[in-house]
Image (cartoon, rainbow, N blue to C red; front, side, top):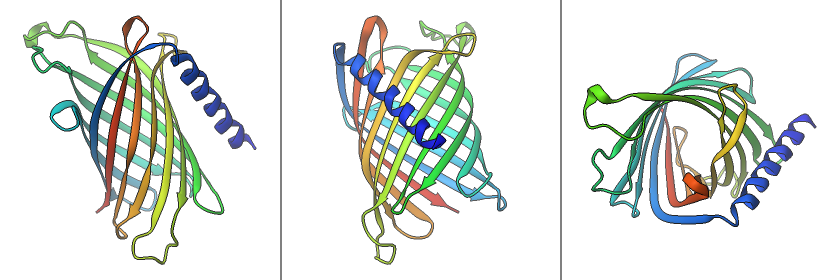
Length: 243
């Protein structure tokens, strides 16, 4: 019951923010997000993972973001996993004429994932805490003038995975949904400001025992300055590969 209450709370948070955004001003972009998650098992309890993300706008013609994210995964039990890692991000200005155009970010993060098996599929939720060093604005061309601002952010994701086929078929397929809320934190470590909301609908294809492919539509709603919001509609494809 405690887990169900947490799921309900996260849905309430999501609905609150989505209703709050209805009356705001939006800028809309279309893009693609391609990623690869590569896992190497260290032992029965620990995996090493590297994530590579490549995001574009104007579908595939303009760079939006590149991410390199190594991490360790500790499998505490069948349904609980702990993560810790580092992310290196290159965030690109949508204006290709901007100079400089790239804003760099380094962050350290911790995450816990809890999965609840269902008769068909599973519910899961994870919470991630990020400690971010972002290149200070306005961006500087000279390296000696660059500086970084520190901040923290917390992320809540709810996931629903339901098989659409039996496991005996040649290509097992599942329906996948997730919604994720990002909240900025004040210097006291208290979430106090909406940052982003992600919603994904798609399918998962188990290509073989080592390779899984997720692909589908994702909408990212991102808070900008002065009450304006950016909506980025993406076709998201992620390859999971176990070495």
